[in-house]
Image (cartoon, rainbow, N blue to C red):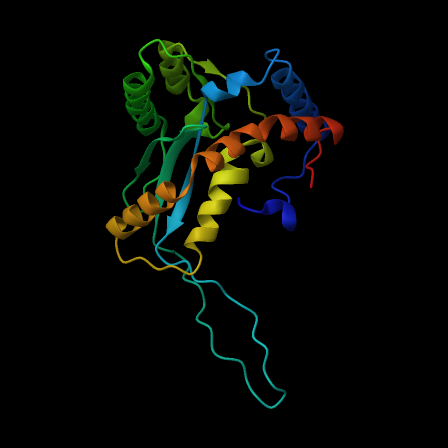
Length: 230
């Protein structure tokens, strides 16, 4: 849902939705006395990565000329799902599913277990973790909640229809899509190599800035009475 605020909104918000967005933003802004806890925040989400990322551009032609033919986009595009978790430290863990496969609660809980092991290896078994993901069905399934409770992590609230408050949507995925635009891939392996290159190209400032924008966005949500902001 990259750059949705430039032309389209993600969802027509009802009063109840806007109240939830404000309540959550107020809660998180007052969660601790300082924002240092954001250093312990891990956020994650999923994104489809297409094998073909051609961009249709406007054509300027003389009055007596016809524009070049442009192939109609395929109805069923070839794509793989990227699952990624990151923090101010950078990428914590990422996976590519098999072509056309999507997330289920069982798949997601197995991924979370692999994420937990990586965090324990890099930060220690008792590391403090504040975990943020959206309300996609696999993320809020009973089996997923049980798994997260067993980790002892603090799961942050996230209101529905709020990609503007999810760092993966407003930060990481918009940058990634810009990087992918115009590129074509022949195999899943080619996509994996490109993702490794993209993640490695981002310095520490990129990751920290993406997370540290959250308080500003929470405040904007409050100031906008829960509406999407520009």
